[in-house]
Each structure stands twice: as structure tokens, then as C-alpha cells.
Image (cartoon, rainbow, N blue to C red; front, side):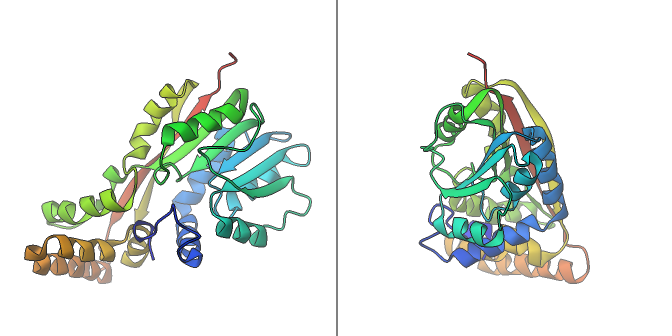
Length: 273
């Protein structure tokens, strides 16, 4: 299973193990680890801070944040999926960590105003229904002068190297448009933050995930499912589409497969008034 064949709004109704496998594969990539570490610093994860990790998934980021804030701080990991929260609680033995996990909806956070020094979301906004409402809720529960951070890829930046660029676009663009609710979120965050009334907004980090093996790229991007979908939608190109997928697999065997996608981390501060 891959990101683009998973319905992220229906995790608990589908096969949660498939979502967990995808998250584990994505998180294992070194560039993902790098931007995550940078995001902790940008969020202000220091001793004594109260932080919210929205869309916490299996809980690893929330656990690192809890280690950073220490016993005088507090971290809440929130996700809409009961299955992912169960997995987070299984994986993260909180022990002495000031860390709790709870099921919740980012569109309607069951939390008091001005509760956190910082709120963070990572690869969540591309899947949710109303990004502006979600951001407004994150701002609401953040204290004045607190930080709001969102990191998202922009699927318009995806590169899958193949000599036939026109065919590649015909196969991939409709696939992502249908599989991901908001494909351009990474490039739209800066505007969304301004509409939310945040201050001192910066695109604080950019990260490009480079993959040179077909297997991982297929798991994360769904190249095979994209080809299958394209054949259904463009049966007159079925032979060309099959050849396209075979070309990618052959490039992998020859050590020449290449793909990349860029993500953006945007940070803003809640006004004092």
C-alpha cells in the first residue's frame, strides 16, 4: 500500500496496518528525519514548553518533543484515528514523559484557548477537509506569541525521471489529483498562514526527498497504482503506460531510477491581541 492508494480520512474503516507501514517507510528516510529535527527547533521545543502535535500518527514526533520539554513541560499528541493513537500508546511507553495521546479532530479541537506554547502539524493538511479551519483551531489553542508550524509537501514538485515527460504527466497528475485532497498544500501554506492572522511568517525550511530505488518510490508515491488508474482512464494508451512502468523498473535495475519531491515548513506567531 502507498500514500496515494490510502484514504487518510478513513484510516479506522480501512486497514490500519497499511497506514502504519506507510508511515514507518516514510519516517525512515534520512531527509524526513532531518526536517523533523529542524521542526522541533523551529517550534521552540525547550524545557517547560507546552506543545501540541496534531496528526501525531504513531507518536514518534510527540515522544521526541516530550523528551525535549522535560518534566516541567507537556506534550499532547492528537490524531483522528483511534487505531493510530492505539499504536502510539503501544509504541511509546510514556513513563516519566509528560506526554498524552488522544483522539480528536483538528477542525474542532476539544481544548481551551491559549493552552499551548506551540502547535505543530506534519503532512496532515493535504488530507483534511478544511485547512483554514484547522489552522484557525491551531491558532486558537496557541498562546499569544506562541508558534504555529505546518510542514507539507507540494505534489506539483514531484519528479519521476522518464524520457517521456508528457506521458509521465498524463499518468501521475490525474492520479495525485484524485488520490490527495489538496495536492498543492506545500506551496499554499504561506498564504494560509497570512489568512489565519499569524505574524512574522516565514518559510523556515525546505526539504527535498530524493529516492533512487523504485520500490520505496512505489510505496510512497504509488507509481504502479498510478499506471493502473491511467490505463482505466486512457485505454488507448495502455501499451505505452505499461512500457512506462517497465522503463522505470528497468532504470532501477540499472541503478538509474530517480525521483524527488519538495516540502515546505512554514512558521508563524500568534499575535498578542
